[in-house]
Length: 91
Length: 172
Image (cartoon, rainbow over all chains, first blue to last red; front, side, top):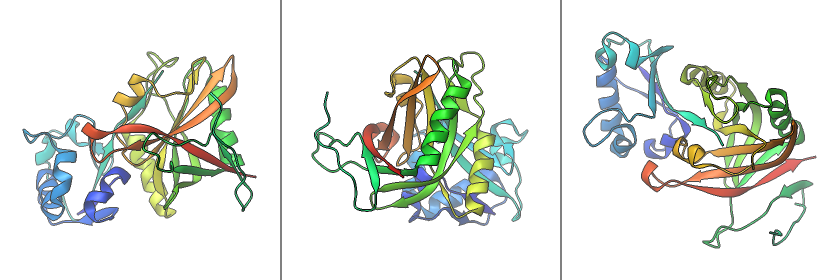
């Protein structure tokens, strides 16, 4: 499957804007991504291994945190996982 | 506080708010056309007294981001739109998808501060996670766009991040 890498994380992926991985689930895909690019791990996960609160994961157009199986959701090679850091603010 | 200097670049781009961070290194530069600059500011006037927000699409150069398009986005903070904004992640997914089709990256974001200075707030800082990108803020005073500033989100990690004022270079 394809993982789209957002601008802030490309420096930790050798400048790539996407990665192609073999995986059966979302969790396996993230593991494969961080196996390829170990520096990315701390930017995606807390020391306890949970996805950082400001990191949104979308499997195609679905927010992974709201899928019934969450990160254990099964994926196919036609799926795309997007990593999208939150954007918010105000005065 | 007066700026140390102002200059016109050889290719006709006017540079706004030049300055140097305390490190003494040249600051990064956000380059965009007059049309995009005007569009960002006009968006803030249209949504006043609420904050506007949107994404900037472009290409990274050694000097900083070259913005090719500004994409208005919805503000999901309808509970406090006069002083808060948030772009729905799904909207960003779609914006990024479309950007990729055109060979562009998400270069940063813009939003407005109704009747509030064009300076990043603690909320802006706490919610900034797009390291290496530009955050453009426009003060909209009494419904009219006033100062526009851009801040580069520097740092190698969330724990080391900092906002650095950057130059806005407007073409034309």
